[in-house]
Structures are given as structure tokens and as C-alpha cells.
Length: 357
Ligand code: KG4
Ligand code: ZN
Image (cartoon, rainbow, N blue to C red; front, side):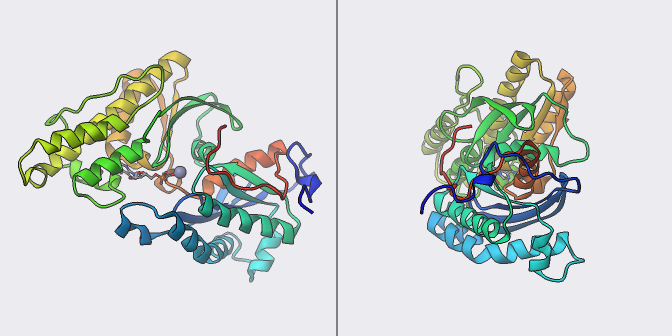
């Protein structure tokens, strides 16, 4: 029979009455990182991440290969996360008995990748008879800011910048998050990766642009900034602008000017992000400002955010690097707040590649 086979776990169900600590096992598999984390009462006890190097030779993530790698990685990654969190228990079976709920990334992401984590989490929940919690990957990136001991107070703004998304989110409480601006085309991470490719750098190019930019002059080359209304972004024009500029140059130009090109591209992207963030603060009056997603590792963005914050009187929060890129700890912390709110999923839940929120 297809249907809701576990009615007591549907959303809106009452959370099980529990006076002791709440322990969550969370799984993230939305793209090319397989990750598992254990969180007790909002404190992260472990966060294991298996990266997939297989994609490097293809210049981007190959969905089919990502799914296969998740299949290989998921059991060892979950076992490692459980072992680190509960060294006092000798076996994964004993460690799993201490878990109160299983959480997983339900959307958005590569469907084949999401399926592996979803199916694994559902099977665990069914066999252990534990509640299941579905988590939205982008909400989790924002709530990664609640992992640190010094947390932002609500309301706060979060600039989420990753390979797939660029968003400004207004957070009024852990589960009251509204997207107030986003990219209408490429994400900021894509802008880094695609221009890096034009400059002859391998995937993912973002970290390499950051590295070469340290030696370069950010004002050497000027690339047009798009004029997009409201708090939205557009990055596809930057790639074209860099492409046309490079086509006009002599052979060897990229090699001779790599550092200046990287610094100038980075300067343009960071400028676009900080201008919109400043506009968001002016519009909302919210001065607690957070950052999330893989691009928040960028040194110019971090520096620019700190400097702008100091000038404008903002309070800045930047999660530890391991909680910025894709990780299961952010899924676990989000699931913890969903557990407190009684937001459980039924066992017939499936993944979705795209998901509004
Ligand atoms: O959040 P994330 O790990 O995965 C997604 O959900 O997309 O973000 C990956 C993105 C890639 O585009 C990568 O190039 C970019 O983050 N990235 C950086 C840096 N480190 C990672 N971009 C610029 N500078 C960096 N240091
Ligand atoms: Zn992500």
C-alpha cells in the first residue's frame, strides 16, 4: 500500500514528550558531499564529510557519479559520526539506540544524490522506529549560524552564497525565514567557477581565484556590474563580460595577468554582494548580519563584510568554515529546532530537486 504508513510522524504531530536531551542523527547528500552529524540539544558532537574528488577531471559535478559515490560513502560516514559522538557505546547498533530522530536533506539538490540520503534516512527511521525530519538545504545553510556559542539574536539577515544559490534571507526565528532577495540567474559560486574556467583554472575555481587574487590588483580591470532591481542579483552577465574582454586580448595575456584578472573578478563579485546586503540592511533596519554557503570562505568577502560592518555599525557573524560548505551539522541544528516545534515527516516523503520555501 502506498500512503502514510507512519501517521504519528506526519508534520503537525505532537513531538514525543521528552524531558532528557534531544539527540539527532542528520544526513546531507544534496550535491557532491556525503556528510553525517550528531547533535545533542543543539550542540554538535560530530560532523563527518566525505568529499568526492572524482568530479575534478570533468570540470563540474557529474550527477550519476555523485549518486554512486554517496552510495559508497554513506555507511562509513554515518558510522564515523556515530562513533565520534558516542565513544562509550561499542557498536553502531548501540550508538543508534541513543538517537531520538533521523534528519535528512530533502531539497533542493541533485535528485539522484538526494535519493541516497533520503532512502537511507527513511530506512533507519523505519527500522529503529524513530521520527523522521526532512530539512531544506538552504534553510539549513542559514541556521548554521546557530551552531556557534556566540549566536546572532533574531531578527537577523543572512547572505547565503553557494555554488547553486545566492540569497538574502530575513530570519525572525529559527523556523521563520523569508527570502527577500536572490539571484535571477547564476549563483555567486557559479560566477566564480565559470570565470575561473575562462581563466584556465580547474573546477571548483572559486578557491583558486581567491588564492591568485591575493597577489593581484583588484582595480586593474573593470567589469560591468549589473543593475538589477530590489534586492535581487544577476551574475550571468559577468561571465560574458569576462569572456568578451579575454577574446580581445593577445595570446599569453591570461598567463601574464592571472593574478590581476582574479583580483578584479573577485572584487566585482564581492562588490555586488556587499552593495545588495547594505541595501537589505537599510530596507529592513536589521543590523545583525550573517553569512553562509561555500562562497563565504572567500577572503575578500569576509574582509569586506567585516569592514562594511564596522563602518555601518552591523554585528557580523560568520560560521566556522566546516559549517559554511555543505555539511550535515547544519541539517542537524535545523532538525533540532524542527523537533522542538514538532515538525516531523511521514515515511512516504520523497526528495525534490527544486523547492520553494
Ligand atoms: O555551499 P557549497 O559548498 O556547495 C553548494 O551548495 O553549492 O559552495 C560551493 C561553492 C563553489 O562554487 C566554490 O567555488 C565556492 O563555493 N567557493 C569559493 C571559495 N571556496 C568555495 N568561492 C570563492 N572563494 C572561495 N574561497
Ligand atoms: Zn549548499
